[in-house]
Amino acid sequence: MVYNYKNTLDTSKDYILPCRKDQLEDVKSFLPIENPDFDGSFSTYQLLYGKGGNRIYLLGIGEDKHSAQIEAAFRKLCFDTKKYWGKSMQVYANDLSKDEVRKAVIGLEMAHYTIGEFRSKKEKQTKLSVTFTSTSSLKIILDEGKYTGETINKIKALVDAPPNIKTPEFLGKWAQKSAESAKYKCTVLKPAELKKQGFEAVLSVGKGSINKPVVIINEYKGNKNKKIDVCLVGKGITFDSGGLSIKPSTNLHYMKSDMGGAAVVLGVVELIAKLKLNINVTGIVCSAENAVDAESYRPGDVINSYSGKTIEIIDTDAEGRLVLADGLSYAVKNIKPEYLIDLATLTGSVVRTLGYHAAGMFTNNADLAETTSKIGYKVHERVWQLPMFEDYESDLHSDVADIRNFSGNPLAGATNAAKFLEAFTEDHDKWMHLDIAGVSFGSSSYAKMKSASGYGIQLITELIKEKTLK
Ligand code: BES
Ligand code: ZN
Ligand code: ZN
Picture (cartoon, rainbow, N blue to C red):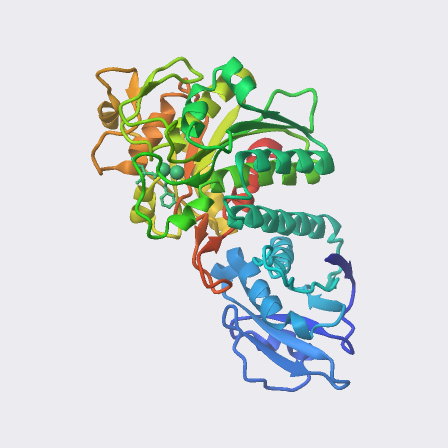
């Protein structure tokens, strides 16, 4: 898709006319009839025809509170009607804020996501050029929107990809290709190297699979004179069968999405590199398949970890925290970032607590919590803080090792997982863990089954911008 801007609307051609709730008056001069049946309710639309038969889509963008999710309205309109569009479309954007324009572009991009990548008959995509009207330059905002929307689509494709294709090695190749095109450095550590460097927890989780684990280290340096601003760590379990503590088979196919955290990390580094931000970001993806096999790690095993701490395995289905432990230890020891943020589809517990509308946020840094929460509302990728009290620590005490990976009780699961991770952060004072199990993959009106949401790309990118550029 190509985006540009110009001063005035050509009313003889097709256009989208965004209209706020009960504000038809504001767009009166662009309407072909005086009183269309339309009230501007959020994400509703109405097709009118101009004198020459050109299409005029009145698009309801609702009230101020809807501004954070305006991409949803553009996405729906474009998804539903794009088969009737020609090669070009205009958007009347004089009354949209810059944030709204960026989100409109994201929505238009998202409308072009095709989940059927593995169908033999492919959907035809026509090249579309969209012109926004504005009296000031929109170049930067349109680029931001396009890159963001494209990245969201790319990470959705990864999360929706089948687990036989999307192996840890595949994620490594994906990262290498991305690094070449967006110009950052990518290192993929394979099993021999993981052994040499001591990624014992990653190796243990991956033992039961023929698809061997990898750790991906993506380094974007936009400012060579500065230290590393941010390190992101992502859980990249390409399929979580539960291992020997095997999961029930109902909905097991959805466990292909257990690399949602990794996808956000891969996407954000790519996006920041494309935007050429003047900052330094490292992304670490710890990827393995949690499979059932004679070689699988077992409940009762005591394993080692990158940090040197020994871990008693109580449940092999609590595997995400194990691979993340190594990623976090590696980051603290070698990257030494100012901000350390991990993302993971970590627990069923967070889904039971917050459902599908907010990620669980865990941090001891009040300022980071406040900023993340604020940005969550702004981009409509919301977070909700859950506790990190010391009292939860005793749940992870082990008789035989330094720590155990599960308390054995089905209580406070998301906090317990976060407390486990904390033990591998060396008390990093700007660390935050986001449990995205409920938000990264779910139902939508765009697919029959659950599918990737793209959650996290806007949240983390905007958070990084806010913390490092302002
Ligand atoms: N990948 C799952 C968490 C999950 C559940 C993600 C539902 C997405 C949707 C994770 O590895 C897991 O199995 N967690 C267990 C931990 C338990 C055994 C301590 C859980 O939350 O039940
Ligand atoms: Zn699991
Ligand atoms: Zn998992």
